[in-house]
Amino acid sequence: MPDPNPQALDFLLTRRSRPAKTLQGPAPDRDRLMTLLTAAARSPDHGKLEPWRFIVLEGAALARLADEVAPAGERLGKIPEEIAKAQAAFADSPLCVAVIEVQKDSPKVPTIEQSYSAGAVCLALLNAALADGWGANWLSGWTSHDRGFVQAALGLAEHEKVAGFIHIGTERLTPPERPRPDLDTITTWVDE
Ligand SMILES: Cc1cc2nc3c(=O)[nH]c(=O)nc-3n(C[C@H](O)[C@H](O)[C@H](O)COP(=O)(O)O)c2cc1C
Image (cartoon, rainbow, N blue to C red; front, side):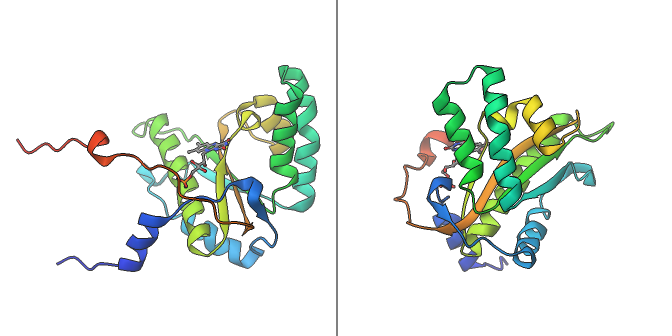
């Protein structure tokens, strides 16, 4: 017989992100964040490769990253608005966890499955933060895909990528619900 957990299911049926630009302090302290990271690391991982790690970005680090955005943006030919938006994402964040995909050599687990696992970690961290009452948002942006930026600002190695920046803090306002997928459109039932 199933052993339902209605509270958990209700959370999954109603959860929604809080836009990063509406977040403010306080952010979870280190003890609380360790609980959230523990939940995130409990994610499906084919071959137990642990193809991910966390970089927790707090106050001074977020200011430093914001400072490193402009030179990267100018090198890439970004317009001032794109640079300002990327700067604000770090400068205004109460706390940001960079979830790093770390590709491992494996004869049996394809690289794409390791990427999926890193994505699962991002969602698990987002959901853990939301379930704990924080506002949280999964962002990427051009900084997360620029090798020069992630190497200089985050010290990533060649086999590492940013899977997501998970911003966590206290919500200033609850956003309205957004349209959700039509299940009939995306679901195919196969019974023969
Ligand atoms: C990989 C990934 C990257 C994302 N990057 C951004 C981003 O840079 N900017 C943005 O506004 N939303 C971005 N989003 C979308 C938001 O995280 C999210 O989908 C939206 O806020 C609604 O989330 P909800 O379904 O949890 O309510 C990204 C989502 C994913 C999965």
